[in-house]
Structure formats: structure tokens, C-alpha cells
Length: 412
Image (cartoon, rainbow, N blue to C red; front, top):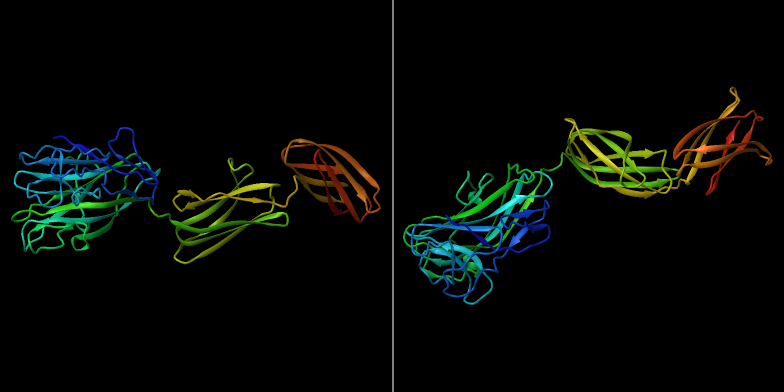
């Protein structure tokens, strides 16, 4: 059985792949939409190929119109076929069908998950339009179903979703209807849950024209949208902020709820690309109320630093937060001094933004130089022990690099 492509429009987060055989869903939470206005509006035509990529139709029944092509109508025709429905000559179209004993139409669309993570639910919305009532006193319907293993409209295992069926909104007075009139339109929406469509996996959706008693109705689908969704994160992070506080960086974050939250790793980077762990904060485990967390980076880097949280579940699974940037108050070179009178030394922890040479001098409060030492500094932290037997009291240590001089007071 031949299958012909219908058309579609591209919107944010959606792309049609080069083969034209499926609609690529590229971003969770972003809807693919289709209004079918590229369908033909040539009145009375019956041999239109459906050329918008990603949508398919198939026809059975063996009648003269069983040609895998669609016709154009405004609701006046009683002949079984797949139809582009709309007012005469209007470019506002909808895709639908009218079933007969010799023509059974099925139409739908084919999607590929390229969102980067498994799709666990999809929200589908559309407007059902009635363009003809065939028989009074009974309803007709387009029955919705989906398949995650189908390769066409007629293969695979299909699951019906009654909440997405379109049922004739009126049953009085047979004849043509204006499907754009609110009386003959029904807004339909539902979320299909329990899915597990992996990256690269596919899902087919379709509508089957049910066989109603007597002459069938002309029913159509318009203003269609499909939104793929990922599984909600076990931990709902609502904020993550950083603030320079003297020589430190204070981090704070909040969660709205938590499930099986083991802990947070605090990651830091000097370039926004390579991150290393600098701390860990225990999570609340399970919570349905807001929680507040904080961490202080007491060895902040000079200039701009980048921070990120890595949240771990109790089973070891992890997810990363957004990356935030903050400029510290730390100089490009800085150091800490720890005097040890018993050992006769001064120990320094020196931070340098870059590898290079440095000069350390120690003065008393009268400005007399007591010690001078040339140092080789590594990029990052360097620990140095300097012999020093100065008098008791306050002293000043001065570190000079190629770009600056910084000082630190200490007590001997």
C-alpha cells in the first residue's frame, strides 16, 4: 500500500530531517505545530499528492477514489475519500476524511526524538472540525492512536487514546457544515504518559475514520500541536546564585522539592570549560517543601570564576545545574602567612594566576627590610617555608610579581 507525505510548517525547536520521512523533535517542552494550510484548495480536485513532510495517509476499500491521494471539499461531497477541508477557495485548510463502503482513510504523522534525552510524555492538542453530517441522530468519530514500534500507518502495535478522539459535535440536519464555525469545532487536548522513547526513537500517531451507521460524516483535524517532554528531575532547583564577599565567594541555591537527593557536588572553573570539585553539601533526601542551601568558597580564584552544581541521587545518577559566573575580590596574586616562632620560620600559601617569578620581602613596622627571597611560583597555589627569626610583634610581608605587589600583615 502506498503512503504519501503530507506537509508541515516549521516552528521553534522543530526541524524536518533530510530524508523527509519523519519530523525531528529537537527540544523538550517546545511544541511542533501544523495548520495544514499548505494543502490544496482547488475545488473539486481529487488527485492531490500530499507533500508536506512527516505526515502520511493510506487508503483501502478498493473504490475509484482509493488512490492514496486527497480531494478538496467544503463539505458538500458524499463520496468517500481523504479530504482537504475548508471554505471554497480559502487557504485555511484542515486534513480529514469521509468514510464509505469502498474508501477507508487513515492519516497521521511520524516523529523522531532528537531532544537529547528519553521522551516520557507528549502533549497533543488539535481542533476537530465537522464539515458534513451524513446521518442525523448518531455520532461519527475520528479515533486517535499511537505506536512506538510502527514504521508506517499500518504496521506495529497501536494504543488507542479515547481522550484524543474527535466525535461529531452536532447530529441534527444532514448536509454540509462550516467547520470553521465554533458550533462545529471541538478543542481537544491530552497528555500521553508512560512513554520511554529513547534518543533516535520514533512515535507514529494516526486517526482512523470509524464506520458510523448510515452515511458517514466529514470530519477533520486542524491546528495540531505535539510537545515532547522529559521525565521531571528528581530535584527541582529553583535558584542558584553567587556573591563576592570579601575574599570569599558565597554560593546559595534553593529547591522546590526533592526525591532521593543524596548530595550536591560544588564545581568550580577558571575558564568555564574545565571544572573541578571544591566541596560537597548533603541533600535533604525527600522533601515536598522548599529547601535552602549554602556553600562558601574560601579559596576563591582571582578574576571571574564559574560555578556549577552536580546533584546526585541515592542511586548514583546525577544532573548538572546551570553555570553561573562571578568576579571575585581576590587579587591576581595573593598569599597567607603563618609564623612559627618555635621553628623559626614563616610559612606562606601563595596563589598566582600564572606561573612566574616572585619576590618576597618581610619588613618590621618601621619599614626596615628583614628578609628578602626570590621565589618560583606555580600557577595556582604554592606552599613556601621561609626562615625568619624576627622580633616579637607585628610584621608586614610583601609579595611582588610581574604584574602587582600585595601585602599581608602577620604577628611573629
